[in-house]
Every structure is written in C-alpha cells, then in structure tokens.
Length: 161
Image 1 (tube, one colour):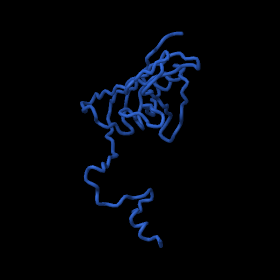
Image 2 (cartoon, one colour):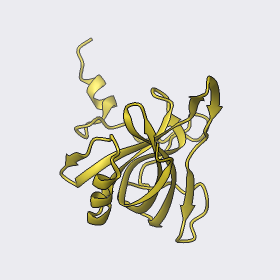
Image 3 (cartoon, one colour):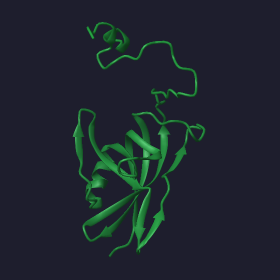
Image 4 (tube, one colour):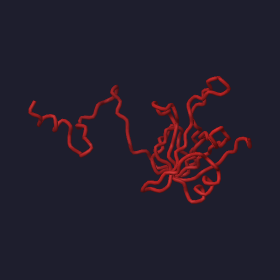
C-alpha cells in the first residue's frame, strides 16, 4: 500500500451538503464540476469514482461519511472543513456555481482507491438563493406555488368535492 495522498481539485460546486449529512446515507457530499487541469489530475489519481456528464459539464461526487467503522470501532468523522477566502462569515450558505478548491484524501482499499472529502475552500462565492420557512417564525401570506406556477389554494378551490 502506498499510503494516503491528498489531492486538491478545482471547479464549480453544486449540491453542497457540508453542514448536515444527508439523512438517507449519513454522508456529507458535493458535486464538483472539474476544471480541465483537475479533470486530468482526477484521471491520474486512480479514484474509483464515476465521472458524470451533464449540460453543465463533467462532474464527480465527493463524499464524507459522518461515521465510519475503523478497526471494529465506530469513529465520528464530523463535517468537512469549510474555508472562505473572500471574507465571508462562517455559516454563510454556499450556492450552486461557487468556485471552490476541494481537498480529498485518497487511499488504497481492497476495492481500489477510496476517498474522504476533507475540506472545501470557497474561492468565489455565489450566494445561496434558496430559503427556509420556519413554522415557529412568521408564515408568509402568499399561497405556495406548484411546479407549474399555479397556486395550490386556487387548485383546491376548483375541485368539485
């Protein structure tokens, strides 16, 4: 075994889950749309991750397990480190399309090269445009819209039963 090597990949991030793990898989994760140099480095790294293609480019899904069994013991890994280079405050939400540098530890496993997402450095922040509505805070007066832009209240008013 060659030991652990750290790689730094650059690109644009989407679907960052860095503050709370995904409840279904108990993992933190992100989709990284690799720049050209990072794509070449990724191919040389030997990582067993699948490159995916979308209308926005080629990307890879990096992850970090919240907990991991190491030598028969459960170890809490915690979340990846998040660093902002533009002076943003910790807790700032990172929007899709933000330019980032992602540090990943790569190591040998019985199935090939494994990885752990260690950190993300935000080089150029795209503000998160979503929002949160808290039931214990003020509830907005406007009706909720469905995917087609129709008001759900208006739809239910037209039903015959």
